[in-house]
Image (cartoon, rainbow, N blue to C red; front, top):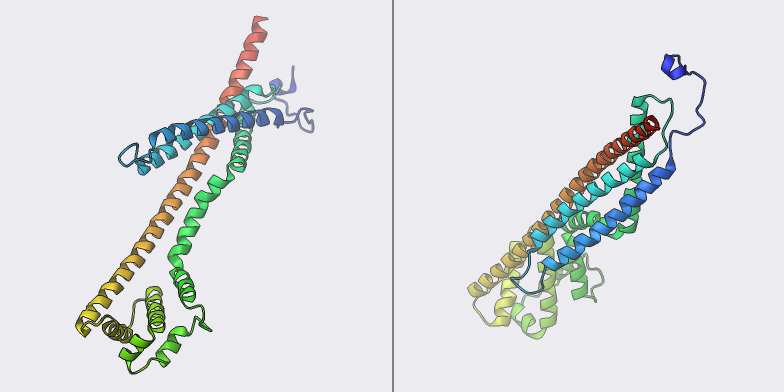
Length: 299
């Protein structure tokens, strides 16, 4: 009678066979990774047949994106199930081991197979996953730093300025009294100064009233229109600048939210895939032990 069957504790005795069998784990991981790549290529081919460069033909971008996300989840789950099942079926039988311990080892082998396959797939398609994560970071940077873009444009529009950070205040100190003569004789400087005022207004909460009157005076003199018409034109342009700024920030915020949602759903899908791989390995291991026991009985 064996120690296990008689209930006597086998304290101090180590089994010569390790509990972790890397062969089945690697085999299941390779099968899962290969299945993932094949199915993803198949999905890409089918998706390309659904889109068209011609307006009105093919599926919309939203439809294709949703279907691609669903297909990615399905592929990940199918590959995890296949890899875990093969891992459980290919491992050697553990003799004199409690059923609960066998179940734990099988699930652990399935989890390791899933983890190895995930690392391999991410390594082979790292650019796609990096792009997904980078979209949210880029959107957040765009939303948080519109001043950087505005400041760069201001420097580019006036490369001769000794210090772009103080050029706005320098312009305020050097504003001439005769705006009409300045606008007619030095149009380039007036244009550059207006550009700097608009840039500063874009990165702040708006253009101050004094600057609005100043721009209106230059516009009236340069365009040959009345002060009221010049002020109306300035207000219209400033409103367009605010609308463009709001549209940019809204688009960046939507991109950030989409990237965050995709990242969280991707993490949840991977966790479900880990569970599927572990359960499939336990199922495969149980079927392997049952088939072997049935074969011994028949013999």
